[in-house]
Structure formats: C-alpha cells, structure tokens
Image 1 (spheres, rainbow, N blue to C red):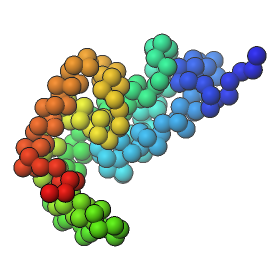
Image 2: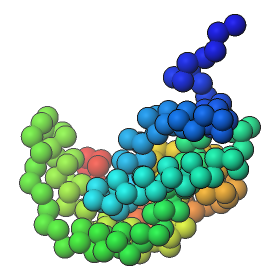
Image 3: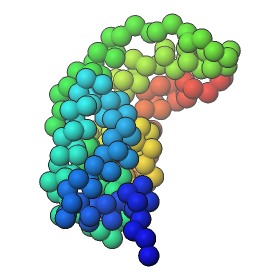
Image 4: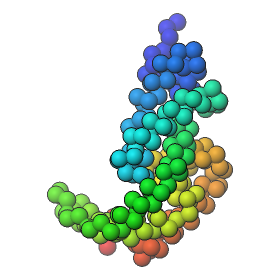
Length: 192
C-alpha cells in the first residue's frame, strides 16, 4: 500500500499529520492562502490582507490540535478564523468603505460591449454599495461576504461562523434585502 502524496491527502489528514510533522501544515497554506487572500483583500484591502492571512494561518497552526478531524475540508474552518481576524481589523475596514464612497467612478473597461455596459453601471453603483455594506450589522455582513467573496456554501458559512444553517439563510436574506433596497431594488450587473 502506498502512502498518499500531500496533494492527494484531505485537509483533515494533513492537519493530523502536522501534529507529528509540523511542516505538513504548509500544504494547507499552499491550498488555501490565495483563496483567503482574495477574501480578506476584498474585506480590508490588499495592504492588510497579507498580514491577516498570515495571522489566520498562525492561529490555525496554533489551534490545529483542537481541529475536528471528522471535518475532511478545512476551508470553512480557515474562513472562520479569517473572519475573526477581519473583525479585529474592523476599524480599517470601515475606513475603507468610507473611502470607497468618496472614490470617483472609474472609466469603462475595454472589452465586449455588454461587459463594458455592465461594468459602467456596476462602477456607478460602487459608492452606494459601499455605503450599504458599511451600514449592515457585522454578523449579516460576515455571512454576505463569506458567500459572495469567499464563495462558500451555506453549510460552509455555518461551520465557519459556528451558527445554524437557518441563521445563515436568514442573515443572508436580510443583508441582500438591505443592499438591494440601497441600490433602488435593482441589480447593477443586469441589463435593463
């Protein structure tokens, strides 16, 4: 019987292996650092994202003994840690939303006509969207951004935030309603 390579091992197996061989944990970083960086960068800006991702993996490494090895996929666990790290940087995030509200609208992006039109409409909505996001309660914002920017399923968001799936659904619904209302009950990415 051959031992599976690091690329073939599930996350839980890597975490378990890292208890005896700490360097095995690096494979989780290789798998998820870019994904977490994109999520955190959207939340806090690229300046802070590198530090927060590093803090996320440091916290995960320190807490790996408490990881539930029955959970084969560590992505929700890592996103939960990242979301908690983002909460620590809340003031910087709020300042970023305020800055987005004041940012002038970018010009059109080169590309197919449909994409340009959608991009211009979405760009024009950016200050309003930023204001709507800044006005959401933290718990609703976390759920919305884990789904939209973290690309997590409802069940994964529930695991990441340690809340029931029904709570994820209700918070997401409430956040979407508020954002949609702030945008005049329209979707700026859809053509009229």
